[in-house]
Image 1 (cartoon, rainbow, N blue to C red):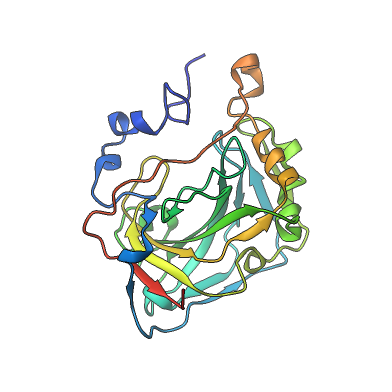
Image 2 (cartoon, one colour):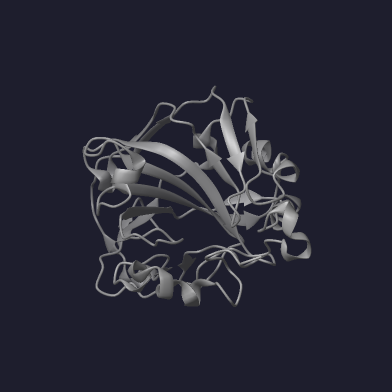
Amino acid sequence: MASQEWGYTIENGPATWVEKFPEARGARQSPVDIDTSRASSSGSAPPLVWRYSVNHPRSVVNPGYCWRVDENGYDSELRGGPLGSDVYKLQQWHCHWGAVNGEGSEHTVDGRAFSGELHLVHWNTSKYNSFAEAAGQTDGLAVLGVLLMVGSKHHELDKVVKLLPYIQHKGDKVTFSEPLNPANLLPPRVAYWTYPGSLTTPPCTESVTWILFKEPIQVSAEQLALMRKLRCGEASCGVEAMELLHNYRPTLPLGNRELRDYGGN
């Protein structure tokens, strides 16, 4: 069976993506190392505001390189901060992790990696008519990044983690209707770094305003271990359906992009 077009192995990993996805060699790529000494303090900005639907059916999917929760088009809103007056809507959220604790985040902070990173992907509904249209525009997407560190079990996230045994293989999907509030995945303190960047997976489109929270949230070692048991192939390809032990892209140069700091240290 042919290997997946891209992934995280030697054969199809991040170092090879530029061959098939030319945008991956651009000057506005993500993730980056957050060099806190380079971050400019932006003074006052409108507060970052979000509102999410809690009670609606969501799908948890294994697209072959992570787990992803699809919001299925339900009402939500993200605005303020670096996004100005445009209103963004939550499309999906997913996670990146490493083979061992202490690695797995895509962004690093002063060179330090964390054990994982949640991405809540939003699209600009003020200017565009669909996620697909927005994903191709420089101001089309906004992603909230949340760093994960090993500690106590995260109860909101556990609503997803306990379903992972049912989506072991690529293409597997389950729907769940248990109430879940994506706002509970965000840290209590609204302090963040922001910069213009890209999707961290192919096609690596340079359409993302990144908002990375400074304060990590805690997840348990057991929760991370369940994520690593996901497989990156279809059930039919047997031993080739290797475990998804790590799925993060290494950091890329910030270049001359402005990195801004909101809300304290």
